[in-house]
Image 1 (cartoon, one colour):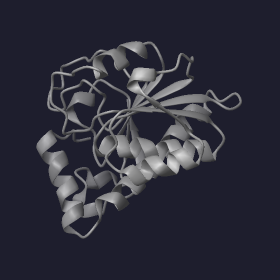
Image 2 (cartoon, helix red, strand yellow):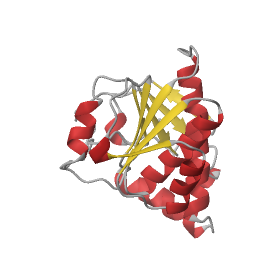
Image 3 (cartoon, one colour):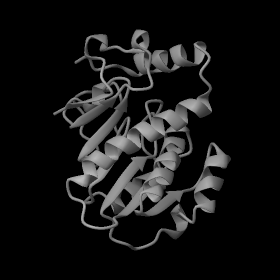
Length: 210
């Protein structure tokens, strides 16, 4: 399995955009694909409706998180979105209209979640991690965290770094990133054409790397 760099991840995204995909369509596809993997992860420990917190960042990774929140709500989970800045406001509006609990970083609620979805930053993130994100991660550091594409605070091109937390799983789009070499990773490929995939010899809906 080939692990890819920030430059390679950016190229994969650009390849999709150059084929005519709209960024809003890619966010919907990525969010739904991630939701399906999350369902498989949490079903192993499922015991009634779960309390799930989605940490939503200001970019496209955060928008993926809003799509994930919607689908988790559809299947009956108690979903909380914690965010500050939203990139795609229509996704925020959908969540609000579905009565998903929307909370700002300044007014975080004290609940014990069953899972935390880390959708704060993607492969474009650059260290250092700043406030309020440092405090947010520390608040949930001991919870079961599932990171979307890149764990928050990890430097994508550094395969030897350990961040502030170790997620129980990373859901990577297209290919696993270098920073996830020591982490359990679910690689989602279902919305990438084969010619855009770095690991074309293993073209599956998704696969698990442990």
